[in-house]
Length: 203
Image 1: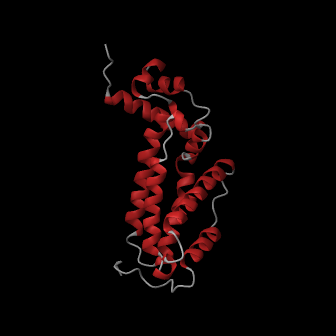
Image 2: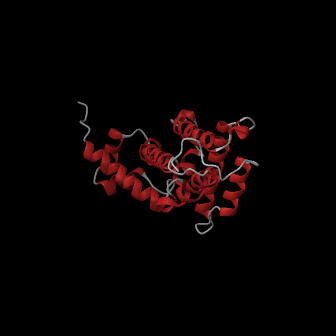
Image 3: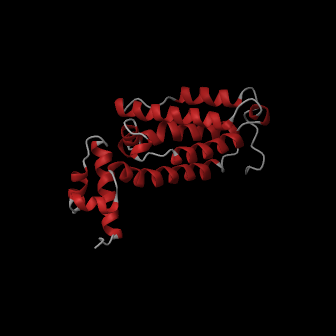
């Protein structure tokens, strides 16, 4: 007879996993520890999740999507292209790598030793890169769009995001500098009039 899944048990497991991942890290957290903190047996975990990796992405996927959507909404209210790009890069390279005790580093730990056979799919990364590419396209002037591929730049920015996540893990006090952010913004804007409000943006 199949076991009945209970929403509250699944959520208890996710809450337990988030707490342990945030404080111990993915590699040092076991399914037994997650189950114990959630008040269920280790065997019962497999009723809800196929693996620790699946559990991690059940947390990380909505966590990251919510933050990217919030970034889109916030940046849409910023008319100046330079300020808009700075907001995007500071969020990606400074804020998110440090949030919740460097929670994003758990994903780096998890996927560095996995393959598609283990259940990893780049769906979330592709979604994030598409949203970042759209934000870049909306912020840079037309002449820069002709020489820069927003999708390729977004891919580079997310690869840099991974690096800053690892750097925060290794050196918690050493965040990406504003100088690095400013240099990338200048590269993206080129020699355009960076103080010109984006067409259609609120004044």
